[in-house]
Length: 238
Image (cartoon, rainbow, N blue to C red):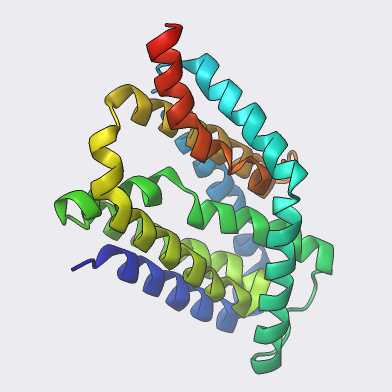
């Protein structure tokens, strides 16, 4: 029985609710400084994952074509619309978020949606539990997500708690498919997959810190392309 995804999802809900309830009760300097720390941590984790790369040309090709695909189907715009719907539904139940424009809300919400749902830790942890039954990696992610969701919810409101739904769906899906996927994957493919995820994590960190607004959601199709590209590169070129 899978446990990790449910623990992780519960942590996001609890953190989101507590953070939104606290809101402006937390000092402004804390609400400003901690997201910058989370962004820095995201960039640091991205670097750690990137250096594991085996076939960088395959990763770059996957990133370029994945980003093109995401742009062509307006993936980030679609996620933004879903985020807007989630915010409107939540605002009917809880007090609406003050101090953020719709555009500012979307910028931050999409960034943390990718951070929570597409992190290398969550993806690998889900696959690891699906294969071995060991949820320890997702337990670690749950601890981090508890505090991260609480801090972001102080400015984004109760809508942060809704991220638990897509996160849970993704993790359950990956865990269920792990038994089918992992026997087909070698170490080089996993390393290149981690590198692609690291690039997205690095871009997410830059976005959270307000340094550069990368369309991180539009890069997500690269995660579907990188393993096949890595295999083809190793088989026919490298």
